[in-house]
Length: 220
Image (cartoon, rainbow, N blue to C red; front, side, top):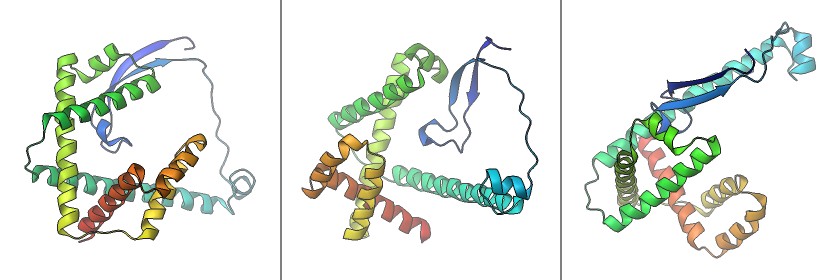
């Protein structure tokens, strides 16, 4: 009822949008602000045209079915890509400098802190959800940092061995996709950095090369 507060833990599905959270336990804090009963209208051709901007009820259901099928296909691609990256990590045997691992750990901790702040979750609740103390999380972040570097170096080796390259057109597409998600007030600076072919250009080039080599391997 209105005003009720509930706290519960759920295991996120394997198809969860954020890969690093799949299969993990998540602590939810829920407050009931209002209770309403929803009466769904009958899906008719007239309703589809007036409210859903579709030619008919069948056109609307066909669109939904296609959307679900496309999403399932995307999830399957993500699963295959994840399995491929696991194989790359597994077969990449390298000694990684502690300085590199420490630097990557700082990035991971920063990303995690931003996620917690955005979700308004305290550090205490997050640790409880993970079932770890501060030392345990530090070890977890170190493991993730090592895995990131293994994947990065393994993919770099594959790019070199397969002579993978990207065209100017593919690079432009990568930059355009990056620009769409960037706040408007940062786009001008990003364009200048891109034109100088500085750090941003190199980062996006590596991203484009990574996507291409993974696609080639999955399609093989």
